[in-house]
Length: 90
Image 1: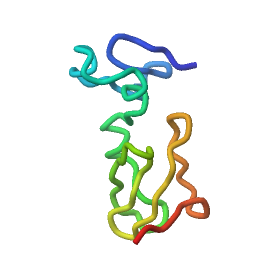
Image 2: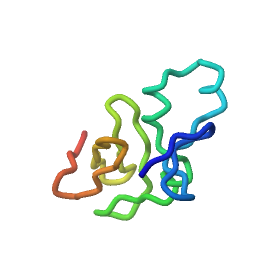
Image 3: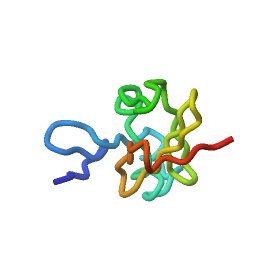
């Protein structure tokens, strides 16, 4: 179960989403805060097809491979890292 704390959303003791300092000052809305993927999680994720880094895209929320251009959707704060469901962008 996810816990919504002062500094982010956690499951157990592991951070799932982390709020940025600017969020606390009202510069970003609640939806934006929840849409952000923790930086350390993003650094661990790679494209399942070619094992290259992914870049986070906010609108629509997705992860794009920097090498093979596959785009993986993020649904309910969960990256869908299935090659068969990824779209390839030009």
